[in-house]
Structures are given as C-alpha cells and as structure tokens.
Length: 378
Image (tube, rainbow, N blue to C red):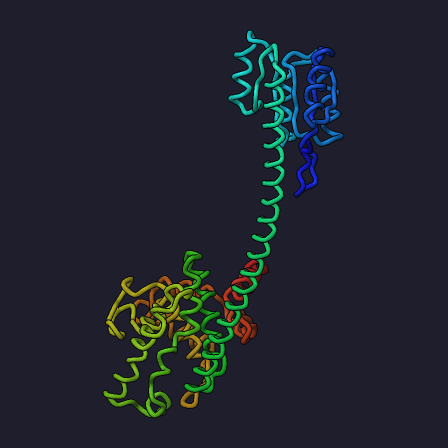
C-alpha cells in the first residue's frame, strides 16, 4: 500500500510517534508499518520538536503525559508552526476534560482513549494521511490561484493604464483642437486647469472634488464645438440672436459630458462657469452658493487667464491689473472666498505654473507639481 501523493511528491504516510512508553510505541509502529505507514519514534517533547523541524510528517500521534511536559502543549505548538500535520492525542479517560478543551481549540484533530485499539489507531492514521494530502494539495492549488490572480491583476492594471492613457491622449487632442479653433491663445485650457487646481488647493476643497475640477476645467469649452465659426470667431459685437446661440454652449457641454463615466461631475464647470456670484449670469441665473463651488473656483481662474493673455481683439494685461479687476468684482461676479484664496497666490507662482504645463499633463502629475511647489515654499 502506498500513501505517496502523486501530484506533489509529498509523503503522506510519514508518522511521528511521541510516547514515553516504549512497548506502546513498538505496538503502534508495528500496526502502522503493516499498513503502509513509515514511523519515527521518540519519547520526549523536545526530541519531537527537533524531528518535526528536520523532516516532514503527515501525522503526529502524541501521548498526553510526557516526561518533559504536556503533550497538548506540543500539539498546540505544532498547530501553530506546522498546521498541515494531522494531530492525534492519546490519553486516559480521566484526562477527557483536557482533551476536549484541546479539541475545541483546534489543537487536536482526533483523540484516542486508552487502551487504544489497533483498528482505531489505523483508522485515525488513515484519516490523517488523507487530510494531510488534501491540505498539501489545497495549498498547492491556492499558490497557483494566487499566482494566476496576481498575473491577471497585473494584466488588467496594464490594460487599465493603457485605456486611461488613451483617454487622456484623446481628451488632450480634443482640448488642443478647441483652443486652436477659438483663439490664438495656445495652451489656454491647460493653463486655466492648472490655475483652477492651484486656487482649489488654496481654497481647501475636499480631495474627492479634484476629478470634477481637473476635467471640468480642461473641458470647459467643450460645448463650443457646437457653435458655428461665424459666431464663435466673430470679432465684433454679437447680435441678440448670436449671443443666445453663443450662450447655448453651456447646455451643449452638459449634453456632451453629463453621461460620460470616469469624469466625476466635470460637467458642472462647463455648465455653470458663466453664472455670477451676485446674479445676472447665465444659463440659469444662479447666484451665491447655489452655484457649484467647482464653477465658482474656475470662474476666477478663467477670467485671470483671459485678462493675462493677448487676443486678436485686446492686449494682455499685467498681473496687477488683472488682480485689481478680480478683486473689484468680488461679491458681484466672483465668490469672495474664492477671490481671497486667489489673492494668496503670487504672480511668480502663476508664471511658474504656466511654464510647467504641457500636453502630457495629467491630473496626478499636476497635483504632484503643486504639492512639490507648496513643500518648497513651506
């Protein structure tokens, strides 16, 4: 009879007998040997620990009372250090209370009461051999599962990273196309996004709002894709009808971004950034805190960049002049708390940030840049 696990090559018929009664050990070894088991014998707990450290056993048969300590303590230690080993305790009827406690603690799998019958010992050893082999196989399978799961997770992460980068590339291309179409201010959307995030950090928004702010600012003009060139690019004053069509770009933005997953509530900025804190803006005539804070923050960043940038119909303003206009419009056009945060940012900070933005900018890279700048200035 062979009890070798053919899958793992692990011996499941190795039995360690720990008993200070030499005649009992001899009888146990003989009975098990006749039925395909290979036994190793010792009389003490310390020797048993040494043997377990040197050799792999499937089954441990241990007497309760040993010359150098309690057998249950040995089994409890093995349960912790070598949990695959099937643990059998032999004891007298008088020790049944201690035996039951050990079983309840999972330190013992099976207990055999003196006098141990050969058929009982053999049945317990066979059960232990099967369970040991199953545990070894389960561990082997779990290792394979963990390996494949790790490989799958890595592959999925790589795929997700690829998809995310493709999305960023597509958004970036779209943003550059919108900037190029409307005005000659190259990089407007990138700069205003960086300014928005910087003001937001100064304002103290929650981190779960970063996605809204980043993508909302980057795509704030997405709705203008639906505006005709003769209106969008007109250098003179717009007629009432043309102004209504121009203002409709905010609702177009809502239609485009409102159902896009993964961008948070990015649609809030394109939809509401033309509202005014004191009222009188469009498209819904909101005022005060009824305007989403994302849009209130962006409005300051957008106007600042517009004032500081040369356009075909105007020259660029100085930082001081732009700051004066924004400060004067605090409470009417802009949220005073956002203006206060804006005023804490110096002209060199804005210039440095504008010089760092590029077409490979991502939300994470921008936040990292801002974090480094704040640490450097702390």
